[in-house]
Amino acid sequence: MTDLSYAHGTSGTPLLGDTIGASLDRAVAAWPDREALVDVESGRRWTYARFASAVDELARGLLGSGVGKGDRVGIWAVNCPEWVLVQYATARIGAVMVNINPAYRAHELAYVLKQAGISLLVASQAHRTSDYRALVEEARPRCPELRAVHYIGDASWDGLLAAGASVTPDELAARGAELSCDDPINIQYTSGTTGFPKGATLSHHNILNNGYFVGEMISYTEQDRICVPVPFYHCFGMVMGNLAATSHGACVVIPAPSFDPAATLRAVERERCTSLYGVPTMFIAELNLADFASYDLSSLRTGIMAGSPCPVEVMKRVVAEMNMAEVSICYGMTETSPVSTQTRVEDDLERRTGTVGRVMPHIEVKVVDPATGVTLPRGTAGELCTRGYSVMLGYWDEPERTAEAIDAGRWMHTGDLAVLREDGYVQIVGRIKDMIIRGGENVYPREIEEFLYAHPKIADVQVVGVPDEKYGEEILACVIPRDPADPPTREDIAEFCRDRLAHYKVPRRLRILTAFPMTVSGKVRKVELREGYGE
Image 1 (cartoon, rainbow, N blue to C red):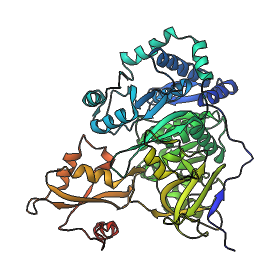
Image 2 (cartoon, rainbow, N blue to C red):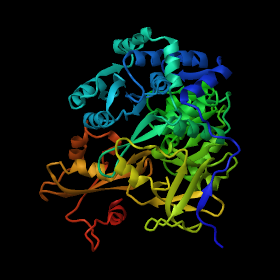
Image 3 (cartoon, rainbow, N blue to C red):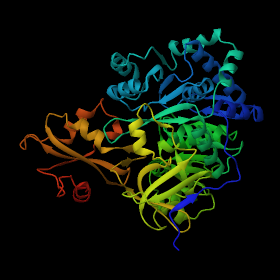
Image 4 (cartoon, rainbow, N blue to C red):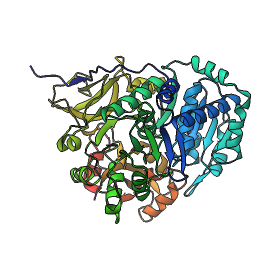
């Protein structure tokens, strides 16, 4: 009898039943003098004892500012120590932290602020070409529930901390005692096929356990120092980075506010990091530095690569030239906290490049026929579904969209086409929907299409992902112009998107067409657009 495409991650290690605050307390009790957080750019450092003290100071400030259990607190910032403090301080008091992508423009920011009902926002002041103050002021009139904004590094941040003067440590402890590990604690927005992002709502139990078991798979201890150049606003940074670290007494090293390959390798060298994170594009950029060979990376032993498949030659170089013999591949999605499958330290090159590993402890996966929901035999491609502690509570305030993603059996339908091999390893072979993964960022064509429909020169548009050597996939806009004699240029489209769409969503390629290839039922054949116009 052929085995079915079902696997369960058995484990002798029990799930954690704690809140994030309780987990941090346990780390402080065990390793008070070990470093918990290092910000390379500013030179600031926190031991676990000092970090917990700073978390509690901010938590009291939030309480003193009127933030209650279940209230939504937005964090719209590049990677910095304050981001991490907000993460743990909101968890400490039972507020729901809402991650906001720093690349968002005003209309995207306004949607998230309003949809989540954010009452207090913590933001960066500026980064590169983004003036966050100006963008907040542009969005604010549409967000009546937003009552306070605090900018990191200025008087408003100091005021937030000062608001805690009236809150005693006992009052903070009393708030913590009211919390359950199943309380919602985090909302992360993931682009939606309808054109609007969905707020995946995650609990202490979801993300604390996922971070913990990701760390277990690569043998983290209090001796590890994790270089985290990936953004905190993704699960990759805040769960696989921060929570994996604190649940093992390890140290998080922030190399720069946003990804910089040279700054990343300098941080690894200077801080003697043992682990390095990134999407394949990041590792490629680091390996391609002209002075790559000059960096001392001998302290590295492991790390995590996720976001898109890793080319074999890149993996060979990461293992050999970056000293990351135990590098791990992870697969998942925001809605599953995020990791469902992961390679193990002993896995060979084929498994690290040809698969996304095996099912994680305490998680189930199955591959089903997308039409019938019936579990398929192993080795047969179908939709990958996952179930267990990691599955989100739901999409914030959107029960119908939640029901579309999570079935009556609590299986999360990923939308990915996968094969569960006889050896238990999972291969991702495609996507049921047309999601584009550009440099580790998930991009849904429908959102961009709906936006571009408003361009005065565009009559119709279809967006697809096409292969790209640098980013894995690049965004191609196939356009039917309103006036064939005056079609839009790529520059026209880029200008139209500027300051209104996140940079990674802006199409870099353009094809002008007179018609789209269609099925007999009238649907656009996107596969033909990808194959015919991808060069």
